[in-house]
Image: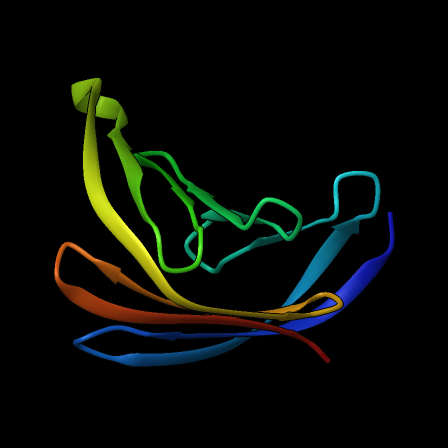
Length: 117
């Protein structure tokens, strides 16, 4: 499994974060996995446009389909509760392992961008 360096940009209604990580590319499933500073493991499936983040407290799974409404799921582990959130990808731009997704989650706009550097 090749190790790669990535830059992740996340723009939320409250903030803009740009971080760099060492990641692992899984060619058999066309996905990139990396660990954030707070020990959250993030996995981006480039084939199915799926974003999965997990830490001790939360498990978040978003499946993106351009210009279609989908459901995002957030599980709060300590409460054993899963919330379904309304999700709509307004733009998905992918070139090789680089992906940019603009989406609306419960009426708030977000932008997630992953670039191999």
